[in-house]
Image 1 (cartoon, rainbow, N blue to C red):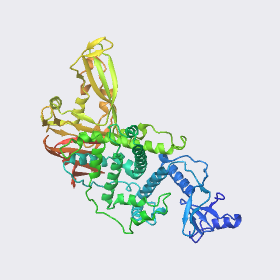
Image 2: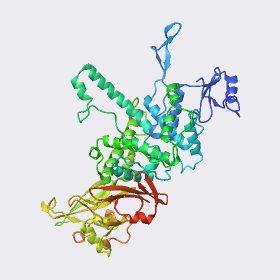
Image 3: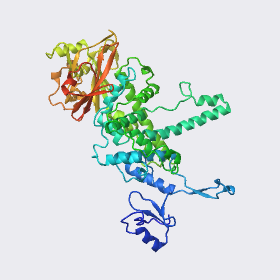
Image 4: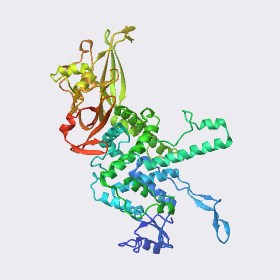
Length: 589
């Protein structure tokens, strides 16, 4: 650019223009200027049209990232310029011709990061309904979807308004029952849909680059026939590394497919369409021909096929024991899935930071994030237990904190006795009683060494809640492996107002020897109220050897019953009285 002037475009291209660019040309003689507004395009008076320049477009992406995607943004730098003397052009008349010294502009971040940032920005624009985005014009499906989104309120644009079914692929109900509950975990839904915390297309860009580098190293090792080099590209298991699996990408696709089914749009196709003509790929006619001008839609409420999620979970490395079509445990899947999901989300954010700082270590706009700051799973699901060992001889405490993502509650005979003491029926157990039993001190069978006494002594152990999570998952231990049976007791639980305040360490931890037997009436009356509301249940119907999982989820004030691909309305009473409650999902008020 000859100067930094910004003004209105010519009237022929922008009706209602005030001729600012034209006036600037007459006064200064500059042939280039930048149009005002969000588009900020470069106009050339010699060509009489807007022109493309990679540096200017890259800077626009950077500024947009600063505004909308701070974690992907990089700092402003002086534009670097160099010359490439090795560019040639094949012509029909003169054959191969040297193009001379061609100006090049080394970018401050790798090209895959430009593409990843653009993909994420385009997805944000789609869901926000920003129909004025220029790239949407030749994309009828994206433009139609953005127009519909534009008519919605901001709250409705990224909200899943009702559940849709998931096909059972052969004893995979254990997986779909947990996924249904996770989809309607509001903070998780917000993270993937509204905040675009993990865009699968952006993650693919980074993983594709890593896979290409790994393939190049492997090819080099094969060419050199070096045994030592071949060993270096092998994974710890001894096998050559395969394309990487990302469960966060699969979860993002699940949310998009789920949302698309509720609005009657193939959202994944829209995302694919919006990836056309990215920065540096302006003339990709081949990709342009893959999409027609026809508006693509899908039937509202159509059940989802989750085969990709199933196979990716099995191939992820941590869930090999769940592979196959035998009967599986939903709670076991929940533990393994949340652990891997959190790791893959963190890895994606680390890839972003690595790409931004690859060329310049001080290039990132934001400081390097701590894992706890970017792991949404730990932020939502992880709490902390305070584990206390109390020496019964001298009263010395040994304390340590243990993280948890869900709590397994016993349904043993001891819990039944506690429940009967409250005047309940023999077969009825309440979640509140299970939680009280969970924080009871228990006498250990073996003697434990006490550093204060200098010998092994009788010891009591107690678990209390040091920190409560945003989303509380309660697992009812119905499967008794020792007796090879399922505990069929009915367990009551509240739909609203589960108070966890009295179970915090300050209110129920043993403080002296004579009070080591915890009683509910010993708790101070001024206990805090930390309330949780139910939003999902996974229920097991059948025996320990053969059974089926179903789900109940709450959307706004309406309950739904999910049984594989079948969805029906449910009442709060039917949810609370349903048999086989196995995993309960609560969210903190």
